[in-house]
Length: 351
Ligand code: GLY
Image (cartoon, rainbow, N blue to C red; front, side, top):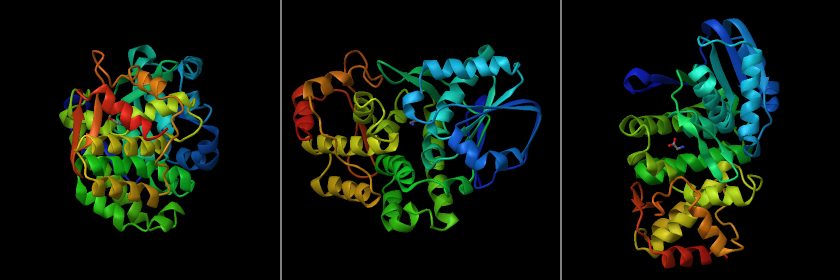
């Protein structure tokens, strides 16, 4: 199955559940991490034909998504003597696709890259849409580019080796899309057998459906707003809170998707306090998050510090904070005029 991302000269396809034989008449540089390459590299290599293949692995984890690791990657690309026709393949989760895409976008002013995501989170979100980047001391993804891949290949087989925690984290981004855009998807999620899914013992078809539904939705969003001037901001639901939590905890406490789950619940408390969401709707989302064993709460030690950290996020502009909130189920809204007292009152609920 394929989904087309119609971005004129940057158009590409997302292939779902089929890793084709790739024949590339150029040098190929595969970026991965030790865990993924240990599990799946041989299978990937059996599908690739190229002039030369170079393999580079970087440490696994969001805490390594930084400029120091980016420099390591670029050095390895130079050591491999890649030229402007070479192709980089990001083979891993969101950290790998963000960093591989970023390295590809700046190496000799840009070479082509392909995403082969191996986590659910990367299949449903990170590997599609062309956001690339790294974190720094000021916050998450503050350095980066919009740079579209040439193709994305999501193969279900890779998802079978994920832990329940990693599958939960991927579900958080899928739940995010459902709450923002489509209540029917929320009903689909509610109908899922969470236990068999989290054990990765569900039918292949379930993975395919989840990836297809989210990629189709994301395609339509990215096609309308590639550079996040408006509509695409709705995909940041939960992220304003999540980025602060991730930054305050040095990216060690939660997987990104888990932090997003907490962030969505915090955003829902704010939406509830502002009258945008009913108690029943907020509870329904919380129940779905809990069903997929996601965290919904983070203990805020210092409310003032948490509040100030919002301003370092790129989602704020002109000293105004942008919050993406649910305004009934299946419909998101961006708010940039929320009174400080209302935000503080919501943060206090998590003290
Ligand atoms: N991960 C959110 C986006 O791609 O816009």
